[in-house]
Image: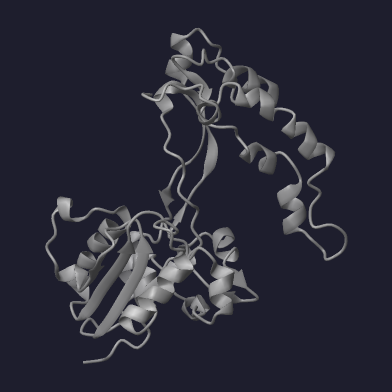
Length: 307
């Protein structure tokens, strides 16, 4: 039987390759906040049904291989041949571990001789006073090699260490081509495709219209101004409900030239002007937003601990 030499072929099915992830967010309670500056995890569409049908006909279904995946949000266990196991919901204690389990079982229906192992750290990547970079080194020390497919919090650093393969060798693959080009470009260095996206976190403001209506607070229009947002987000009574979960610091990134000046840096002058008029005008709103932001008020003892 043909040996599976290019293990990363599997990664195109799993969408579980080197990727830059956002950190964990603070837990939000939208029932007591009028607005929420939030990120919502949305799995990137990896493929269409048609692409799936045509993508892997060149791979022998009797191919043999052994692939180890490393990520976080799991049980902290090293689980071997995951696609051949029969696990209950209670035995899957982390979302990434559960996702890999489901995909591995489907993958093994077509490729039964490819063994899929997973190590998923419990909690977030840097929890337990151990950085993700150190977790990768610990894995190598324990198992004699780095994982074949792993999540990354420092893609540039991992490339510099020589840990990452160039995935552009799969550029003709239909699934590879289905990924968002803009997102792929964020992980492409001079033609070297260092990773594929596992998930995206779109950012936005979510309005609790029901809570506003219950308290006779006018809901701002869709094309709201910053002053209209401020009025709405500071309308909480700060006893039964609050205006926002946190100070929307993302507004400063989105409403100033900081990001665009970094992305379009020509090599001359300052990288970004953090003391520019655009930034300072936005910073003037911060004390106002803080008056009815639940996390800020909690920090100063303004929120009952039982809440």
